[in-house]
Length: 318
Image (cartoon, rainbow, N blue to C red; front, side):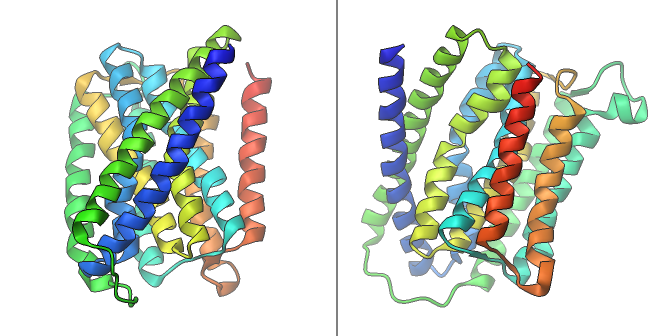
């Protein structure tokens, strides 16, 4: 147990170091090539920090463990929104642009609802014998992801942030991004593996491990990246990271996992899916409340409180 705790701490240190390099490198690239920080966060950073979720879900799908593959993504998206955006807002209020309100936040909600409609089609519409995500449906999600990625980069230059000239050399910035992602992924694996071992020693179920410990562990790169970005005054990169991670988790990771092996949704409760949907809608409600167009510290506390309440519900339901 002591060795696993040491590995857990080592993984966390790597995650924090990687987040710092990734934020600095990606911000430099954004400024130099005229792409907004939000779009960089939405695509490169968002997809990059989702790598631990991809590893866990793809491997789980290969092994036929749908509970792990789906539970990891559902839990990660909830944790990303409630805990990570909440913590980010506590560090510094996150401004939300008109483009975020018109495109990015609604897309996050739409993708979440689409996943539920596809995964729960048997219960909702009587289509099929069991609730599952088929290979064909996984292909649909991947196609939508490709369109989303292309459109994000196409519109990125139109939304360029007005910023100061960046002095970091492109090669160094690229190395910072690659090194940061490598540290995040490797540190995330150390963190997840050790946390899982500790949980198994405690006798917890696969679903509980996936939707709590695994989800929180694989979301550590997003947490570190967003908090560091907020501290450095780069709230748009942090928001883009969360929205990009959530969208990538559903379209890319669950889409790809379903192609590997159809994913059963039978063990994923309506409460889990409902909380994931509500968390996505809360971003929109927070942005339009009082016409302030930002996530402030009060809402950060509310988000974190909801995450704690949800975790308490899961523990009570074991």
